[in-house]
Image (tube, rainbow, N blue to C red):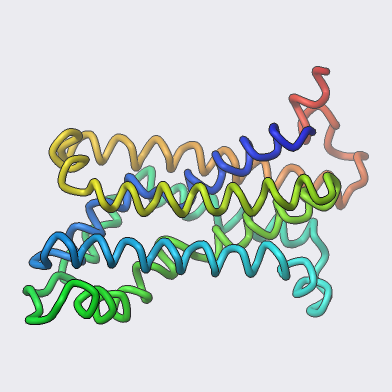
Length: 232
């Protein structure tokens, strides 16, 4: 796998998992009543948190696994199970409704002061674990292991992907009024469910690779665990 192929795969997986477009209704509900500048600053804080948090696990995640004595195949399987459950929830239910009551009236303060107070309340459960949960952490750690085989080029590509997804998340939240108006509730629901289906498929692939690594290719055919590499 080249660095560009790695970056594309990592970007698709991470973008589908964070699902910034699908989280637009949640962000809109959680910042309802706030002034436009305040909502934009909230989006900036959330995106910075996402970048720093995921970059930390990208850099140190493998060392943490070694410290706790967890093998990468076991982590792949566990991460795949978590991703599948999250993807299934996205594909089946309107899981954004639980955050509708997070909205508050406009606070009598400047945009940045409002954003700081709102961000403190959105760290849990919006920023974590909805936006960045165990599934995102698992995905970052798994792709960090693949980046090691590519050297410094893979490391730079991984950090670049995390930065790009964080930036796109901020842009999506900035465009909350426009996206909500263009897609409508039906469009939002379709996007959430399609991304959930993609996430389920990626989760199954993670489990297949984990089992294949554990069985050393005895049980799982290599053209199943790595289908596109086998075609080359």
